[in-house]
Image 1 (cartoon, rainbow, N blue to C red):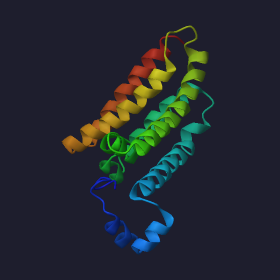
Image 2: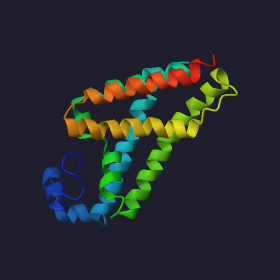
Image 3: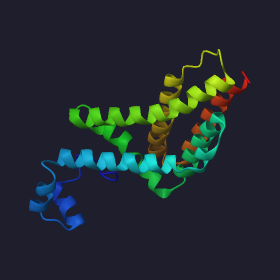
Image 4: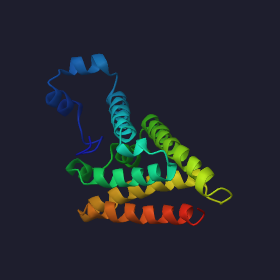
Length: 182
């Protein structure tokens, strides 16, 4: 699904690749959409674990954790698998108009990611930029938009360096927002 997209991946291909019969497939999933939801949840859980286990999470300073999020995303973008994009972003783009259940799940998973980032941004604002007008909710959503948008551009250009460039710009932007207030 990450390579071909949800719509282009058939149940027959899924069964062949996994060594299951169609009967076995439908024993576990009522529909391809149910499988899509399960795959999406598993992907998001895996990504969440990777970020939660990132070395930056040990930082006491929330601003350093935020920079760590960005640096970690840069490192992850260098993995060849990243060239296929983000399943959450891909599903959001491909299925939002045709599969409302998956669209809703994508919105929930993005909201989970925003909430994680927002916690560190709120703490950083409290410590470093108290009284500033930094909108941590919007900034967390901007972080995700930079990653997802950069993945789209990188795929179109066939140049993953787009990710690193845009994430470094994001880091400079965040530094300007917070360090000007330190």
